[in-house]
Image 1 (spheres, rainbow, N blue to C red):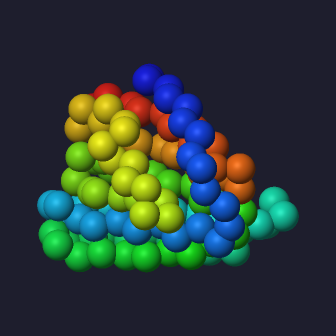
Image 2: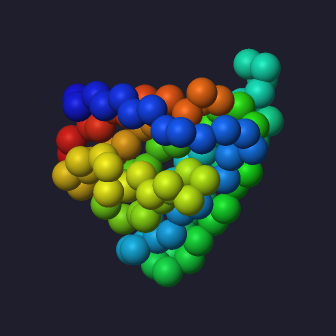
Image 3: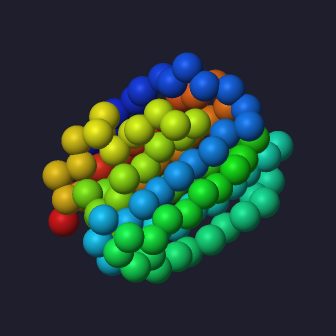
Amino acid sequence: INIENIKLPISSPFVFNAKAKNNTRIHYRIEESKKTLIDQNLIMPKDTSITVTYNETIFIDLLNCNDLEFSINNIRLDNRINCNSSLLRASIDSTGAINTALYSK
């Protein structure tokens, strides 16, 4: 397990964008006031994109984080995280704090 923490200069509302570079899977969950608002599993074909807007916290699981380009409020994140073809679990909260854990295959 490799754990990284990053702090971004962002504020609400947050916009998470992801573009699939290869066929891949993504799971995201949006939480406000400790309640789940959205809990979604997606299969993303190559060259498709998603945009998710949220106000408090997003949790993300990426099967292979090298398969996606992703950003929050137009700040690219995939180039700040050393993915190494790993499963990525991340949370991004309302302070802009990103907590990541990478799990090798």
